[in-house]
Length: 248
Image (cartoon, rainbow, N blue to C red; front, side, top):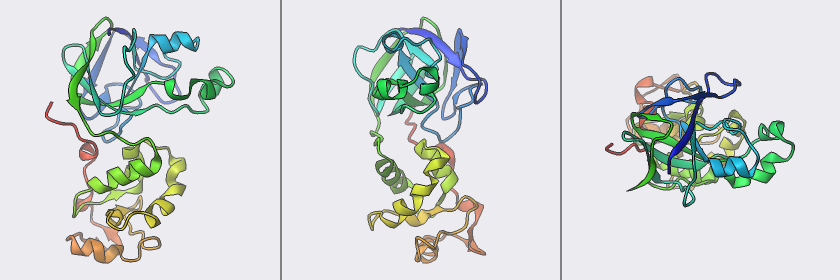
């Protein structure tokens, strides 16, 4: 596989801009791209030219950063893709179709389904250039589930004892939009009993005892300091640790 085109999004809502080289930064994403964010599983989007041709699309219309000439096999969550001689990408989740696609062409979101490309996290920094080789490596990370419930359970299980994550950072870590806030009450209340949901707090750090009556006691047992119903900032889990980056 070779890189056919590279693009960057200078700001949210702005069109993609073709470039000859991208700078990829470990744990952050594409330098200069609006979607770059520590802790996000959506740092970079990769599609292939075959898909663009199949759906009569121009490079950049899917908001992709990397266009590969082709992919001999479907990309899968947990795989590691090397771009050029330096950069490594942990593939996370397929990029879901959204209403934006219907602005390009009515019905496109339904037509394209699971072919919008694959999202990933930069796990080793490096510059990539149009024409560079792209290759799947033997490395394998855990597969990230595609369902909201699956993503939530997998991530919350990884929050270390004595640490908490706010609902705002939870959306970031799961790669979800703000519209998913309304799903959190059900996710918290209907979670398995051994899932440490007490480590999830509100956006301002306050406890969510409405849905978790024993949250204060559970956090106290882990040594978490709570003052005036809010968790001390010292106990917030660092975003750089939200997703495994490996030893790259």
